[in-house]
Image (cartoon, rainbow, N blue to C red; front, side, top):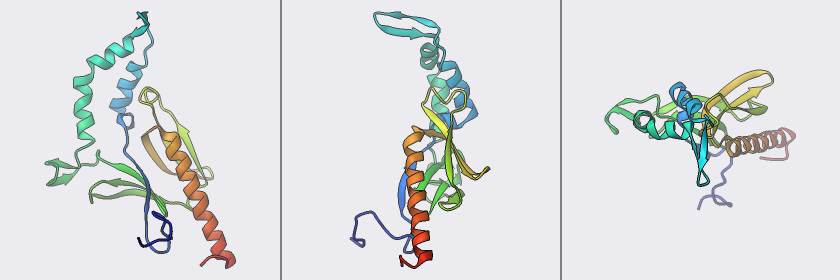
Amino acid sequence: MTTAIAGVAPATEREVTIMSVWPSLASTAYGRWWGRRFESEIGFSFLGIPLTLGRLMALVSIPFILPLYFHMLIPRIPFVIAGIPNAACRRYRLTNKRVIVELPFGGGEQQAVSLDRFDSVTLEVLPGQGWYPAGDLIFRNGQIETLRLSGVPHPEPFRQTCLKAHQVYIGVQKARAMGVAV
């Protein structure tokens, strides 16, 4: 073990992953289109089981949704290991220094924002994302949008973790500026 507290490393030493999230089907326009169809509540209840048009469409749409789902999981095209990087296969990673949108498995970084470059994180649930349950996390510095994470599954825990990491990062920077922390 290289640190006093397992999993905790100073930001000056190295960048450490706090949490990773893979976007859901709700991050794509096609997935949101299907999600709007699945939200339909038209139907009836049979023996306490709700039989709705939305649930029936979810069952029927499986052959159409599975190719998109697997396309979002394959890191390289045409082969999983060799080929060109697949931009649809991405993950959102929170570290002790920044929030990163990256291609997994060494594919590289697409976007990033430092933890001191935003002051609020808002949640926006677009039409069709509510069925998954997912939403877009919008990182803002004042009124300026610095980063948008589309289709984050169960976005509230990730949002809270980002805000806590931001608070800690800013607190340590202020302590360093006052000469308290090294």
